[in-house]
Image: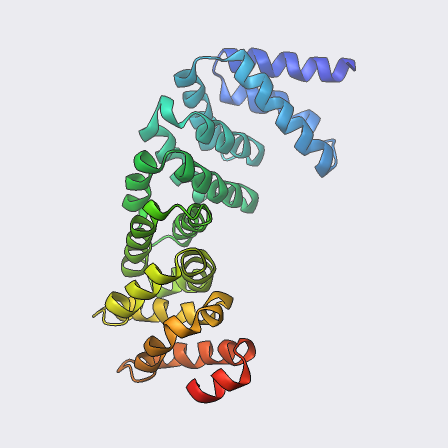
Length: 278
């Protein structure tokens, strides 16, 4: 092992054992600042192993991770994402609070990893973490909305039939509480490639029975945006009646969303289907 590697690992272990987020950041900063991205990722992975070995108490580890999250440093926050999600059960409320904070990080990599970590955590700790995500759903902050939407997509990919209704409920909260501008771009991904692709019958039933009839314009716009997804074309037989109703919606904003969705459907539906229905 090169001497420099011995030095940073020793210093990182010492900082972690003391629970010092600032000392840990100081120990890692110089070595990471000299490495290309690929090598830097490897060092971060090694750093996680060093930290967990030096501080085996899960609750103290969560406190250290919280300090890293609050530091504002990009590397520190990246490490915090993995430490928090990996030790959620030691302090569920604190880890959820810190992950919510990290969802709004100024660093794009941290935000992306937080969304993925929240999705993985929802799969592993569904019944515990689900209510915490639901509490975020009324947030006006786009990055928090994005983290929830990402979590829904990851959980939906499991195809767990017991999760279809709660995931639809969570998405409905998201559609109802968030401004359209905060979640508009997520509708085709979350509703379409996430829920519709995984639970076509259940999603179509919710669309036709609840979302299209909602008194909230934002819900109807999100529902319309789902038609811009590839999954909507794949399940057109289930969704066609709903599209016809949305075309007659009283809201100009909904009808504009219909026109945008129609352009995508025309690209994806066979000519015989698109000619009859669109």
